Length: 340
Image (cartoon, rainbow, N blue to C red):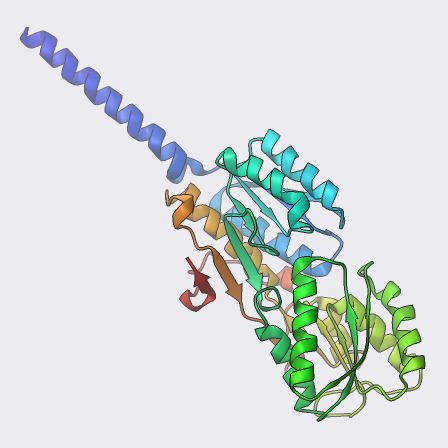
């Protein structure tokens, strides 16, 4: 009987060790080697490339594999991407939602299988939303309007919007609202739905012909602003260069390498940097809270907002290309977590 009890104790001990190892494999350090999937809204965009870079480097530091699929501004393709990742049995999905209505069912399928979703453009049917300031409420619209109004009181402004993506629409509408509140005059708005500098140029050329008294051009991103600045200069007008030359303020956003070069060469006045590398890195770190640290999905941060930084002639000498920024798994600042 004594020998039987001893064998039972050994068997129980072995079982406990096995269960502990299994638990570690789900939530602990053995989460190394798992696959994370990203559905990029448009992989050719420099800002998206930088976000992907941040994710990929963070995943590498965690010992994870990382795969990107390009939705190329197609909501249907994004749904297909999500379903592909579900079939690949990824452990997390990162996306920038193009159409919350179209993506909702696919996101629910992923969530029902325990796959967390990190999103940069929407809070609908996702685990965590990591926004830059443009995508959350209206603080960034007010910053952009203040930059213009503090230099040209009551400036006459042309607005170049973009594709009908929720975060882009939000930023555009917030800027227009803040601009009017600060006494700026919105001359006209047109949208550059194809998202390139080349497609922005004919839009801006037409607007400059109709509104030769324009004093500022606000563009939702850098390619549109670069296209606008090229048209301003080719028309014989001057671009405002902070601290050096007055003219038409040309404002973009994304903080891309091309935009920084545009600021240096006087094609653009200012670009707003959303710190895309940090955004990508943070999305992966939130996944790690669940996959490595074992925090339940319900306890992860719901909304994180990364503050933006302006680059103009006064500080562009310190600019570093987002694709060359060092990625480190540093703690997420508490001030950036706006909802748990």
